[in-house]
Image (cartoon, rainbow, N blue to C red):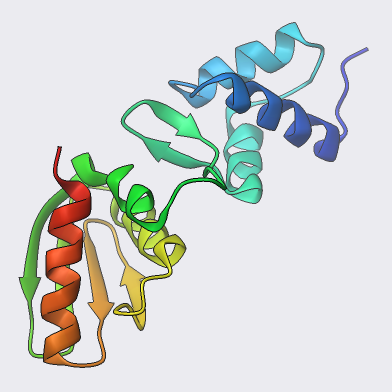
Length: 148
């Protein structure tokens, strides 16, 4: 009989992601099924959100506790398109379509003092800064952390 306990399934997903990124949610469903867990793509999607997994170019991953601040944004660098000031306290960060939430989460996890807060839409993130100086510092920091 398949195991349907949500917490146990989430722990199984964590264990799978610790071994390496999962390319797709369907690949996670298949891996979970092989280990005796009942899962659908929609339940895996909810589980990934609950455990704080992020989607990177390599697939779904757990945010690494040992990553430094710059690595958080570097993990989503390929999703960034443009960074443009909009006044002295706001940056408009354009992303790939559908990627703004992941980029906004990366800004949150960076814990950079220049970022007061941000809002992520579909392909745009608004990032609030304290002043024009901190805005310029933030642009430099983003460019530095996202260089390949």
